Image (cartoon, rainbow, N blue to C red):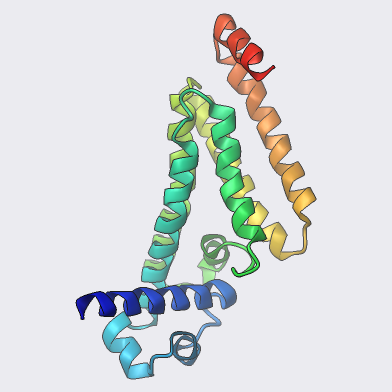
Length: 209
């Protein structure tokens, strides 16, 4: 019985997450969430919480789901930083290409709506938004970049990653999105090689060839 309840809870949270993702916090009503989850208003409040609580649960759920994918992509950054960052972007490109999912990114949409959010929700969105930069910085530092370069490229790569979601929602094609990623990877390649001793860079070139 407990297993069935947990499954139903997960299903309801996923449905609520998709609703917030599709229409945004401000334009999502409790009635919208009721239709999306199949739960009446009283059940939503008793099982999932009020709108603010439910939104934060959905935001955390989204961040944890894709965070695991990003962490897996970056897990080999110490030995292959360029391949790891490309794999990081691939997670986003694959999500964008999935016709079953709403356009864009729940975190990016929420960040753009910060002026309309309550201070507590806005603070949580900002904290969640910063996670990509932090994981990218840690990955790039493990790839032997200097602290300064790792921070700079982490900020840049995180910004590019969020822009992919926004641009896809505005109609950018998969080819255009991939071109944006390629420019970033090319710039990162120069920085990585500049921070890598010559023998290691030579080995990387030979391996790539």
